[in-house]
Image (tube, rainbow, N blue to C red; front, side, top):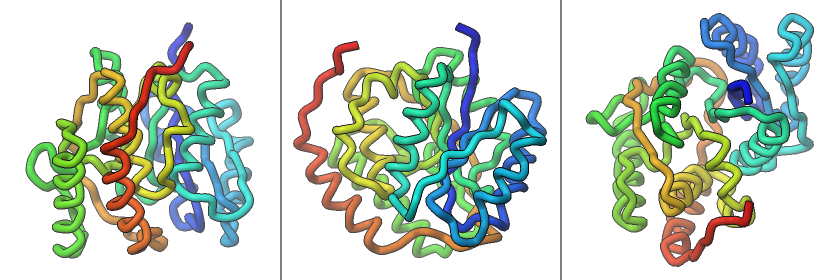
Length: 242
């Protein structure tokens, strides 16, 4: 099967960033495809994406959903879409340039070189975060340390949202195992990949906070992740029949 690589970008009110991130990805030498999963953005984000699809036929796609259904469900929908179309590597990436598209080729190459999951990591080489308030940096770093200790997984950036999966990993993880919709989703995916025995490699990146648009973070996201991690520690799993 010829390798095809899909970047999944969830959006909600990202009109300031949508066209810029799409054009930047398509300027790379690596021939990535993009699936935008838009949760009914009232600001016209989906209209911007659709207007670009004629310029980038076969490479740019959109999945439109009604209402804000959560980050985790957006990615799960994107995974299903990509697996059904025989993509080899499926990559999670934010729309707001906090994840640098220039890092995409090395994320995929790490997987080609033997990993099944590569994580764009803010913390595997110290702390590499720009423009975050110090309180948020500390909270994020300690959240990953908490997850690492509770779940006993050797991952420094457990809440990272810049991730490349080989399709085999996504085929093995049962979507029914995923109970958390916010940033706890990211923790769950890494935990299940690790427990199933897949090789996970962290790739150091520099994370830059968004300069345009509005953050979707909330205290509820952290509360869900905290209690969800405790429950996750006692969750039994077994590999799906394939």
